[in-house]
Amino acid sequence: MVTAGGKSDMDFRELAIESLSTLALNKLRTGLAILGIIIGIGSVIALVSLGQASQKAVESQIQSLGSNLLTVMPGSAQSGGVRGAAGARTTLTFNDAKDIENSPAITAVKNVSPEYSGRAQVVAGRNNTNTSVMGVTPLYAQVRKIETAFGNFITERDVTAQTRVAVLGPAATADLFGEGINPVGQAVRINGQTLRVIGVTVSKGGSGFQNQDDVIYVPLTIAQKQLFGVNYLSTISLEAESEEVMVQAQNQVGYLLLQRHKLSDPQEADFSIFSQQDILETASQVTGTFTALLSGVAAISLLVGGIGIMNVMLVTVTERTREIGLRKALGAKKKVIITQFLSESVILTFTGGLFGIILGVLISFLFSVFMSFAFVVSLNSIFLAFVVSAAIGIIFGWYPARKAANLEPIEALRYE
Image (cartoon, rainbow, N blue to C red):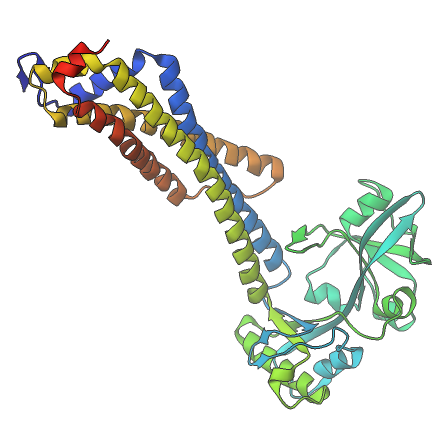
Protein backbone atom coordinates (compact mmCIF):
# COMPACT_ATOMS: atom_id res chain seq x y z
CA MET A 1 0.00 0.00 0.00
CA VAL A 2 1.42 3.35 -1.08
CA THR A 3 0.45 6.60 0.61
CA ALA A 4 0.88 10.13 -0.69
CA GLY A 5 4.54 10.47 -1.47
CA GLY A 6 5.79 7.61 0.73
CA LYS A 7 5.52 3.93 1.34
CA SER A 8 3.96 3.01 4.62
CA ASP A 9 3.93 -0.66 3.76
CA MET A 10 6.40 -2.37 1.43
CA ASP A 11 6.38 -5.95 0.30
CA PHE A 12 9.61 -7.93 0.43
CA ARG A 13 10.31 -7.62 -3.30
CA GLU A 14 9.98 -3.82 -3.32
CA LEU A 15 12.09 -3.58 -0.19
CA ALA A 16 14.87 -5.72 -1.67
CA ILE A 17 14.91 -3.80 -4.96
CA GLU A 18 15.06 -0.42 -3.22
CA SER A 19 17.78 -1.62 -0.82
CA LEU A 20 19.90 -3.01 -3.65
CA SER A 21 19.49 0.19 -5.66
CA THR A 22 20.62 2.28 -2.69
CA LEU A 23 23.66 0.07 -2.02
CA ALA A 24 24.61 0.16 -5.71
CA LEU A 25 24.92 3.96 -5.64
CA ASN A 26 28.30 3.67 -3.90
CA LYS A 27 29.79 0.38 -5.09
CA LEU A 28 33.25 0.91 -3.56
CA ARG A 29 31.94 1.60 -0.06
CA THR A 30 29.50 -1.30 -0.28
CA GLY A 31 32.24 -3.61 -1.53
CA LEU A 32 34.59 -2.71 1.30
CA ALA A 33 31.85 -3.28 3.88
CA ILE A 34 31.08 -6.72 2.38
CA LEU A 35 34.80 -7.53 2.27
CA GLY A 36 35.06 -7.26 6.05
CA ILE A 37 32.30 -9.85 6.48
CA ILE A 38 33.79 -12.11 3.78
CA ILE A 39 37.14 -12.17 5.58
CA GLY A 40 35.50 -12.77 8.96
CA ILE A 41 33.20 -15.62 7.87
CA GLY A 42 35.88 -17.17 5.64
CA SER A 43 38.40 -17.09 8.49
CA VAL A 44 36.03 -18.79 10.92
CA ILE A 45 35.16 -21.61 8.52
CA ALA A 46 38.78 -22.11 7.36
CA LEU A 47 40.22 -22.13 10.89
CA VAL A 48 37.51 -24.44 12.28
CA SER A 49 38.21 -26.74 9.33
CA LEU A 50 41.95 -26.55 10.06
CA GLY A 51 41.38 -27.52 13.69
CA GLN A 52 39.05 -30.40 12.82
CA ALA A 53 41.40 -31.72 10.11
CA SER A 54 44.31 -31.60 12.55
CA GLN A 55 42.24 -33.44 15.15
CA LYS A 56 41.31 -36.17 12.67
CA ALA A 57 44.95 -36.51 11.59
CA VAL A 58 46.10 -36.94 15.19
CA GLU A 59 43.31 -39.42 15.91
CA SER A 60 44.08 -41.53 12.84
CA GLN A 61 47.80 -41.59 13.67
CA ILE A 62 47.12 -42.68 17.25
CA GLN A 63 44.64 -45.31 16.11
CA SER A 64 47.17 -46.61 13.58
CA LEU A 65 49.16 -47.94 16.55
CA GLY A 66 46.33 -50.34 17.34
CA SER A 67 43.02 -50.01 19.12
CA ASN A 68 43.93 -52.48 21.90
CA LEU A 69 47.30 -51.00 22.88
CA LEU A 70 48.20 -50.33 26.53
CA THR A 71 51.29 -48.42 27.62
CA VAL A 72 52.89 -48.82 31.06
CA MET A 73 55.03 -45.86 32.15
CA PRO A 74 56.92 -44.96 35.33
CA GLY A 75 55.13 -42.29 37.37
CA SER A 76 51.59 -41.74 38.55
CA ALA A 77 48.12 -41.46 37.04
CA GLN A 78 44.74 -43.12 36.85
CA SER A 79 44.99 -46.57 35.27
CA GLY A 80 41.87 -48.71 35.18
CA GLY A 81 41.24 -49.70 38.77
CA VAL A 82 44.71 -48.55 39.86
CA ARG A 83 45.49 -44.94 40.69
CA GLY A 84 49.13 -44.12 41.35
CA ALA A 85 50.89 -41.36 43.22
CA ALA A 86 54.17 -39.69 42.36
CA GLY A 87 57.05 -42.13 41.90
CA ALA A 88 60.53 -42.46 40.47
CA ARG A 89 60.97 -42.47 36.70
CA THR A 90 63.22 -45.56 36.72
CA THR A 91 60.90 -48.07 38.35
CA LEU A 92 60.14 -50.32 35.34
CA THR A 93 62.55 -53.15 34.57
CA PHE A 94 62.93 -55.89 31.99
CA ASN A 95 61.89 -58.41 34.66
CA ASP A 96 58.62 -56.53 35.10
CA ALA A 97 57.93 -57.08 31.40
CA LYS A 98 58.91 -60.78 31.59
CA ASP A 99 56.61 -61.34 34.57
CA ILE A 100 53.70 -59.70 32.75
CA GLU A 101 54.41 -61.99 29.79
CA ASN A 102 54.74 -65.21 31.83
CA SER A 103 52.38 -64.72 34.80
CA PRO A 104 49.35 -67.07 34.80
CA ALA A 105 47.37 -64.24 36.41
CA ILE A 106 47.65 -62.16 33.21
CA THR A 107 44.99 -63.58 30.89
CA ALA A 108 43.93 -60.47 28.95
CA VAL A 109 47.34 -59.55 27.46
CA LYS A 110 48.54 -61.12 24.21
CA ASN A 111 51.96 -59.52 23.62
CA VAL A 112 54.45 -57.59 25.77
CA SER A 113 57.06 -55.19 24.37
CA PRO A 114 59.68 -53.77 26.79
CA GLU A 115 61.21 -50.51 25.49
CA TYR A 116 63.80 -47.92 26.29
CA SER A 117 63.70 -44.56 24.55
CA GLY A 118 66.32 -41.82 24.52
CA ARG A 119 67.54 -39.05 22.26
CA ALA A 120 70.96 -39.06 20.67
CA GLN A 121 73.02 -37.41 17.95
CA VAL A 122 73.26 -39.84 15.04
CA VAL A 123 75.95 -39.52 12.36
CA ALA A 124 76.14 -41.07 8.89
CA GLY A 125 79.06 -39.88 6.78
CA ARG A 126 78.88 -36.09 6.68
CA ASN A 127 75.25 -35.96 7.76
CA ASN A 128 73.91 -35.98 11.30
CA THR A 129 70.61 -35.57 13.12
CA ASN A 130 69.32 -35.51 16.67
CA THR A 131 66.55 -38.07 16.89
CA SER A 132 64.78 -40.58 19.12
CA VAL A 133 66.54 -43.92 19.58
CA MET A 134 64.27 -46.78 20.63
CA GLY A 135 65.63 -49.94 22.21
CA VAL A 136 63.12 -52.67 21.35
CA THR A 137 62.52 -56.39 21.01
CA PRO A 138 61.00 -58.15 17.95
CA LEU A 139 57.49 -57.97 19.46
CA TYR A 140 57.59 -54.16 19.22
CA ALA A 141 56.78 -54.39 15.50
CA GLN A 142 53.70 -56.49 16.20
CA VAL A 143 52.45 -54.49 19.18
CA ARG A 144 53.01 -51.10 17.52
CA LYS A 145 51.97 -52.19 14.01
CA ILE A 146 55.37 -51.44 12.45
CA GLU A 147 56.21 -52.72 8.96
CA THR A 148 59.48 -52.54 7.04
CA ALA A 149 59.74 -51.00 3.58
CA PHE A 150 63.32 -52.26 3.10
CA GLY A 151 65.28 -54.97 4.87
CA ASN A 152 64.23 -56.53 8.18
CA PHE A 153 63.27 -55.54 11.71
CA ILE A 154 65.11 -56.36 14.95
CA THR A 155 65.21 -60.15 15.69
CA GLU A 156 65.43 -62.07 18.97
CA ARG A 157 68.97 -63.07 18.05
CA ASP A 158 69.93 -59.41 17.69
CA VAL A 159 68.66 -58.77 21.23
CA THR A 160 70.30 -61.77 22.92
CA ALA A 161 73.60 -61.49 21.02
CA GLN A 162 73.68 -57.68 21.34
CA THR A 163 74.14 -57.31 17.60
CA ARG A 164 74.96 -53.74 16.60
CA VAL A 165 72.18 -53.17 14.10
CA ALA A 166 69.63 -50.43 13.53
CA VAL A 167 66.30 -49.96 11.74
CA LEU A 168 65.59 -46.41 10.57
CA GLY A 169 62.33 -44.52 10.23
CA PRO A 170 61.75 -42.76 6.87
CA ALA A 171 62.39 -39.25 8.28
CA ALA A 172 65.63 -40.34 9.96
CA THR A 173 66.68 -42.04 6.71
CA ALA A 174 66.07 -38.84 4.73
CA ASP A 175 68.05 -36.77 7.24
CA LEU A 176 71.03 -39.12 7.25
CA PHE A 177 71.15 -40.48 3.69
CA GLY A 178 68.81 -38.31 1.59
CA GLU A 179 65.38 -38.80 0.06
CA GLY A 180 64.70 -42.02 -1.84
CA ILE A 181 67.90 -43.75 -0.69
CA ASN A 182 67.93 -47.36 0.55
CA PRO A 183 70.48 -47.30 3.40
CA VAL A 184 70.42 -51.04 4.20
CA GLY A 185 74.00 -52.17 4.72
CA GLN A 186 75.25 -48.64 5.53
CA ALA A 187 76.68 -47.64 8.91
CA VAL A 188 75.50 -45.05 11.45
CA ARG A 189 77.20 -43.88 14.64
CA ILE A 190 75.18 -43.36 17.83
CA ASN A 191 76.91 -42.13 21.00
CA GLY A 192 80.26 -43.33 19.67
CA GLN A 193 78.97 -46.80 18.67
CA THR A 194 78.86 -47.95 15.04
CA LEU A 195 75.71 -49.81 13.99
CA ARG A 196 74.78 -51.41 10.67
CA VAL A 197 71.44 -50.46 9.09
CA ILE A 198 69.32 -53.57 8.44
CA GLY A 199 65.97 -52.00 7.56
CA VAL A 200 63.73 -48.98 6.97
CA THR A 201 60.16 -48.82 8.28
CA VAL A 202 57.01 -47.87 6.38
CA SER A 203 55.96 -44.27 6.98
CA LYS A 204 53.32 -43.75 9.70
CA GLY A 205 53.62 -40.00 10.32
CA GLY A 206 53.40 -38.05 13.55
CA SER A 207 51.44 -39.24 16.58
CA GLY A 208 50.67 -36.36 18.92
CA PHE A 209 53.94 -35.74 20.73
CA GLN A 210 56.26 -37.86 18.57
CA ASN A 211 56.90 -38.34 14.88
CA GLN A 212 56.91 -42.10 14.35
CA ASP A 213 59.02 -41.66 11.23
CA ASP A 214 61.80 -39.71 12.96
CA VAL A 215 63.12 -42.60 15.04
CA ILE A 216 65.85 -45.25 14.99
CA TYR A 217 65.19 -48.73 16.39
CA VAL A 218 68.00 -50.77 17.94
CA PRO A 219 68.05 -53.98 20.02
CA LEU A 220 66.94 -53.29 23.60
CA THR A 221 70.19 -54.69 25.03
CA ILE A 222 72.27 -52.41 22.78
CA ALA A 223 70.27 -49.35 23.88
CA GLN A 224 70.51 -50.18 27.59
CA LYS A 225 74.06 -51.46 27.89
CA GLN A 226 76.03 -49.74 25.12
CA LEU A 227 74.26 -46.55 24.06
CA PHE A 228 72.70 -45.15 27.24
CA GLY A 229 74.10 -47.25 30.12
CA VAL A 230 70.82 -47.89 31.97
CA ASN A 231 69.17 -50.96 33.52
CA TYR A 232 65.55 -49.83 33.45
CA LEU A 233 62.79 -49.33 30.86
CA SER A 234 61.08 -46.14 29.74
CA THR A 235 57.86 -47.93 28.72
CA ILE A 236 56.26 -51.35 28.40
CA SER A 237 53.79 -51.67 25.53
CA LEU A 238 51.05 -54.28 25.86
CA GLU A 239 48.70 -55.68 23.27
CA ALA A 240 45.43 -56.75 24.87
CA GLU A 241 43.58 -59.81 23.59
CA SER A 242 40.74 -57.53 22.38
CA GLU A 243 39.22 -54.10 22.93
CA GLU A 244 36.59 -55.66 25.19
CA VAL A 245 39.17 -56.74 27.80
CA MET A 246 41.18 -53.49 27.91
CA VAL A 247 40.05 -52.56 31.43
CA GLN A 248 40.59 -56.13 32.61
CA ALA A 249 44.12 -56.07 31.18
CA GLN A 250 44.82 -52.73 32.88
CA ASN A 251 43.72 -54.08 36.25
CA GLN A 252 45.55 -57.40 35.91
CA VAL A 253 48.84 -55.71 34.97
CA GLY A 254 48.36 -52.98 37.57
CA TYR A 255 47.93 -55.35 40.49
CA LEU A 256 50.77 -57.60 39.30
CA LEU A 257 53.17 -54.64 39.23
CA LEU A 258 51.98 -53.51 42.64
CA GLN A 259 52.84 -56.97 43.95
CA ARG A 260 56.24 -57.00 42.21
CA HIS A 261 57.12 -53.54 43.53
CA LYS A 262 55.99 -54.56 47.03
CA LEU A 263 53.28 -51.92 47.26
CA SER A 264 50.12 -52.78 49.15
CA ASP A 265 48.23 -49.53 48.50
CA PRO A 266 47.22 -48.75 44.88
CA GLN A 267 47.50 -45.05 45.77
CA GLU A 268 51.27 -45.54 46.10
CA ALA A 269 51.76 -47.08 42.66
CA ASP A 270 54.97 -45.94 40.98
CA PHE A 271 53.70 -46.55 37.45
CA SER A 272 50.85 -45.55 35.14
CA ILE A 273 48.91 -47.54 32.57
CA PHE A 274 47.39 -45.70 29.62
CA SER A 275 45.11 -47.05 26.90
CA GLN A 276 44.88 -45.70 23.37
CA GLN A 277 41.50 -44.24 24.33
CA ASP A 278 43.12 -42.26 27.16
CA ILE A 279 45.71 -40.85 24.77
CA LEU A 280 43.06 -40.19 22.12
CA GLU A 281 40.87 -38.27 24.56
CA THR A 282 43.83 -36.17 25.72
CA ALA A 283 44.84 -35.40 22.13
CA SER A 284 41.22 -34.53 21.26
CA GLN A 285 41.03 -32.11 24.19
CA VAL A 286 44.25 -30.41 23.10
CA THR A 287 43.21 -30.08 19.45
CA GLY A 288 39.70 -29.04 20.53
CA THR A 289 41.14 -26.22 22.62
CA PHE A 290 43.38 -25.27 19.70
CA THR A 291 40.34 -25.12 17.38
CA ALA A 292 38.41 -22.99 19.88
CA LEU A 293 41.29 -20.53 20.18
CA LEU A 294 41.58 -20.26 16.40
CA SER A 295 37.84 -19.68 16.13
CA GLY A 296 38.04 -16.98 18.81
CA VAL A 297 40.76 -15.17 16.85
CA ALA A 298 38.69 -15.41 13.67
CA ALA A 299 35.61 -14.11 15.53
CA ILE A 300 37.48 -10.86 16.19
CA SER A 301 37.61 -10.24 12.44
CA LEU A 302 33.83 -10.78 12.36
CA LEU A 303 33.42 -8.12 15.03
CA VAL A 304 35.57 -5.74 12.99
CA GLY A 305 33.46 -6.52 9.92
CA GLY A 306 30.29 -5.79 11.89
CA ILE A 307 31.66 -2.43 13.02
CA GLY A 308 32.47 -1.70 9.39
CA ILE A 309 28.85 -2.39 8.44
CA MET A 310 27.62 -0.04 11.17
CA ASN A 311 29.98 2.71 10.01
CA VAL A 312 28.74 2.39 6.43
CA MET A 313 25.12 2.56 7.53
CA LEU A 314 25.77 5.60 9.75
CA VAL A 315 27.38 7.39 6.81
CA THR A 316 24.40 6.38 4.66
CA VAL A 317 21.96 7.80 7.22
CA THR A 318 23.89 11.10 7.25
CA GLU A 319 23.92 11.31 3.44
CA ARG A 320 20.20 10.54 3.19
CA THR A 321 18.99 12.83 5.98
CA ARG A 322 16.96 15.06 3.66
CA GLU A 323 15.43 12.00 1.93
CA ILE A 324 14.41 10.54 5.31
CA GLY A 325 12.88 13.87 6.34
CA LEU A 326 10.91 14.09 3.10
CA ARG A 327 9.59 10.53 3.46
CA LYS A 328 8.54 11.13 7.06
CA ALA A 329 6.86 14.41 6.10
CA LEU A 330 4.86 12.53 3.47
CA GLY A 331 3.65 9.97 6.04
CA ALA A 332 6.28 7.22 6.20
CA LYS A 333 6.18 5.51 9.59
CA LYS A 334 9.18 4.75 11.81
CA LYS A 335 8.65 1.05 11.12
CA VAL A 336 9.17 1.57 7.38
CA ILE A 337 12.35 3.62 7.85
CA ILE A 338 13.83 1.07 10.29
CA THR A 339 12.91 -1.84 8.01
CA GLN A 340 14.49 -0.09 5.02
CA PHE A 341 17.85 0.50 6.70
CA LEU A 342 17.88 -2.89 8.43
CA SER A 343 17.24 -4.63 5.11
CA GLU A 344 20.24 -2.85 3.57
CA SER A 345 22.42 -3.95 6.49
CA VAL A 346 21.20 -7.55 6.29
CA ILE A 347 21.77 -7.66 2.52
CA LEU A 348 25.36 -6.53 3.08
CA THR A 349 26.05 -9.17 5.71
CA PHE A 350 24.26 -12.02 3.90
CA THR A 351 26.12 -11.30 0.69
CA GLY A 352 29.40 -11.16 2.61
CA GLY A 353 28.44 -14.34 4.47
CA LEU A 354 27.73 -16.25 1.24
CA PHE A 355 31.03 -15.29 -0.36
CA GLY A 356 32.79 -15.84 2.98
CA ILE A 357 31.51 -19.42 3.10
CA ILE A 358 32.76 -20.04 -0.43
CA LEU A 359 36.14 -18.54 0.48
CA GLY A 360 36.38 -20.58 3.70
CA VAL A 361 35.55 -23.86 1.93
CA LEU A 362 38.06 -23.08 -0.84
CA ILE A 363 40.85 -22.30 1.66
CA SER A 364 40.02 -25.50 3.57
CA PHE A 365 40.23 -27.54 0.37
CA LEU A 366 43.56 -26.01 -0.66
CA PHE A 367 44.92 -26.60 2.85
CA SER A 368 43.90 -30.26 2.71
CA VAL A 369 45.56 -30.68 -0.69
CA PHE A 370 48.88 -29.03 0.16
CA MET A 371 49.15 -30.42 3.72
CA SER A 372 47.80 -33.91 2.85
CA PHE A 373 45.12 -33.60 5.54
CA ALA A 374 41.53 -34.80 5.33
CA PHE A 375 39.15 -32.27 3.77
CA VAL A 376 36.82 -31.46 6.67
CA VAL A 377 34.15 -28.76 6.53
CA SER A 378 31.59 -28.79 9.32
CA LEU A 379 27.99 -28.15 8.30
CA ASN A 380 27.53 -26.68 11.76
CA SER A 381 30.17 -24.03 11.04
CA ILE A 382 28.43 -23.13 7.76
CA PHE A 383 25.06 -22.90 9.50
CA LEU A 384 26.66 -20.82 12.24
CA ALA A 385 28.14 -18.53 9.60
CA PHE A 386 24.66 -17.79 8.20
CA VAL A 387 23.27 -17.18 11.66
CA VAL A 388 26.17 -14.89 12.56
CA SER A 389 25.74 -13.01 9.27
CA ALA A 390 22.10 -12.34 10.04
CA ALA A 391 22.89 -11.39 13.63
CA ILE A 392 25.61 -8.95 12.56
CA GLY A 393 23.24 -7.35 10.06
CA ILE A 394 20.52 -6.89 12.67
CA ILE A 395 22.73 -5.94 15.64
CA PHE A 396 25.04 -3.53 13.83
CA GLY A 397 22.29 -2.22 11.56
CA TRP A 398 19.79 -1.51 14.33
CA TYR A 399 21.44 1.62 15.71
CA PRO A 400 21.78 3.43 12.34
CA ALA A 401 18.23 2.36 11.39
CA ARG A 402 16.82 3.62 14.70
CA LYS A 403 18.77 6.85 14.35
CA ALA A 404 17.27 7.40 10.91
CA ALA A 405 13.74 6.60 12.12
CA ASN A 406 14.01 9.05 15.04
CA LEU A 407 14.96 12.05 12.88
CA GLU A 408 12.50 14.93 13.10
CA PRO A 409 11.08 15.67 9.62
CA ILE A 410 11.58 19.48 9.85
CA GLU A 411 15.16 19.20 11.14
CA ALA A 412 15.94 16.56 8.53
CA LEU A 413 14.63 18.74 5.69
CA ARG A 414 16.82 21.64 6.90
CA TYR A 415 19.95 19.44 6.93
CA GLU A 416 22.63 20.56 4.49
